[in-house]
Image (cartoon, helix red, strand yellow):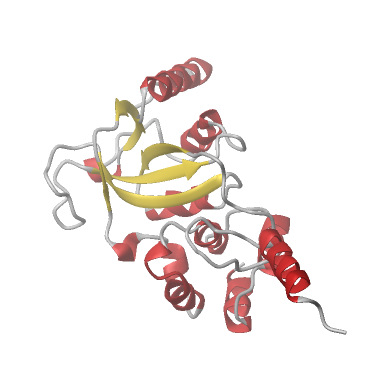
Length: 236
C-alpha cells in the first residue's frame, strides 16, 4: 500500500531537512547538514591579486560566502580598468560559531608577503577592519608577528570605508575557468552564483585548497551532473 498524503509530506520534509540548504539557493542540492548559519560576520583583506585569496578562503569550513572587489581608496566608482587608488580585496562572510576572526587573520598573515611593499597599490597587503574590535585584533596580530620575527610589516591595518564588488568575471575565477563545471554551476545558480557556499568551496577545491577527505566528502554528497563531477574530480 502506498503512503498517505500526510506520510508522503512528512517523508519529503524530512528528506529536505537532510539536504544542503545553501544560503544562495532555494533548492537543496545534496545530502549534508544545513549550511545556513544563524548569524554571520564579515572580514575584508587585501593580499595581492584577489583571485587566489577568494579561492583560499572559500575552501575553509565555516566560511559562508566570499566575494572580490575594490576598497581602501577614494576614487569614486572604482572598476578594474579605472581602479584609481583602490586595492583588490576579498570579502569573507563567515559563521562566528565555527570560525573566529583570529582564525582568518592567521590565514591572512600566512599567505601574503607582509614584509615587502607591493609594486602597485592595487596589490598591497591590507586589513580593512569592519569595527574597532577587528582593527585592534589585526594590530595586535601584526605587532606580535613583528616581535616574533624581528622584521617590520609593511601590511597596513585600516578601517573599511566602502566596498565595491568587482565585475562578475572576477568572481570565483578558478571555478569559472574550469571547463563544463563553471558554466553549469553558473547556469544552476544564476544571480546567486557569487553568494553560494557550495560555489565558494568548489572554487577553493579546484585551486588546490582543502584536504583530500574534505574535497571527496563534498563531491560525494552534491547532487550535480556526472559531467560536472567528473571535471571537478579531474581538477582535484
